[in-house]
Amino acid sequence: MLTWLACQLAPKVGDLFATRAPPLPEPSRASALVDRARAAHAALAAAAFSPRTDIDAYRALMSMGCRDLITREADQHPDTAGRTPNFAPHRQFQEVTLPGSGGVTLHGHHAPGAPGRPKVIVLHGLYDSHVSRYVVEYSVALERMGFHVLALDLRDHGRMRGHGPPPSLGLHEGRDVLEAARALGAKEGVSVGVLGISYGGHCAVRAAHEATLAGQADLLRGGVLALSAPLHIQEAVCALDDRSRLPRPPGLLPWLITRELYSVIGRHLGIRMREAGKAGKARDFENFIREVVLPAYPELPNLVGALLGAARCTQASVMGKLAVPVAIVHAKDDFLVPVMHAAVARREAGDNPFVSVRELPGGGHASFGVVDPTGTLGLLGAWFGTLRDG
Image 1 (cartoon, rainbow, N blue to C red):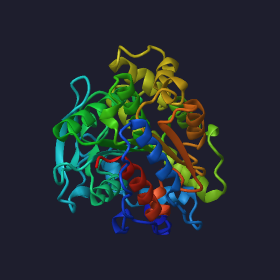
Image 2: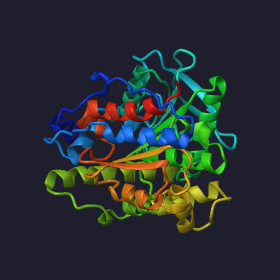
Image 3: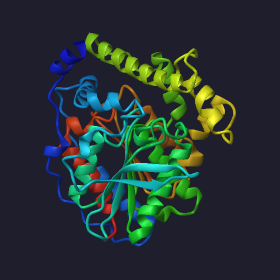
């Protein structure tokens, strides 16, 4: 009853399904990837974005959650995760499987379209799936712009929920995404980009890192766009276990929204702990990493701190060396993954021409599409449109 009442009080917000995307820019004619990256960074910086001023970051996130309650709940249980029919009205999207890394099979929905069109992989956030409404919105919007689109499930999310290895804080997920890009690009030799939202943004940057390490940056020449990404993964995990590290909610309603958000995250984490036979253990992320993640990946560092450090994108050994065009977009009012993540990434990137950061005046956590739908599609079009082939 309280959830129903809260959703009735939630503000009405933007809808990418009903928003016309602006025309794509001309693709960069530069032959060198670094020059294409510079052109895309300039186009992204020039794209207009004007968030609504009558809705704050807390209510924007509440509105997003209220639009997709059934899917979010279904995504926590292996038998129903990734199976809600949000893609059903969009018949151009078909269920597919692709190879990941280490023998893992990835699941998603793909809109193949006409041969030769550039491709974009869309990655969801923590405890969501490729059929979450916001993922479907982004996917359909990109498909309407003229891209082949693959909405993909990450490890232990969606169709992979409870049927494969647990999350690895992006270390293996980045390799999974790179393998998916390899499979998509190899068929037609077209550009492949990645759009990652929240945790998916972190995994997208990890994929760019893996492509760089492999000397195969061209596999992701379509660019990586990370929205609201917890790139300082160590700080993100600590903040989820200790919310005093995050901004204090400014009032009763933001406090209630934050309290409910943490309650939901804790419940979802508890489900996974019980499945792993760790029901008696503390329901926090450090314990989950120690008790569930590390035993499943014996090759990873055997200390929680070492694993978190290895997975952190906000370090010079990652940001300073990326050879894939990467853009990090973050809102200044993000209370769940503060803009500090983007600021540290900018600092550690130094003068790397492949990396840029844009801080938006509003948009909360991954809520860009609900506070300025037209501006959000403009950002996507500016970035992926400039980097697309032909």
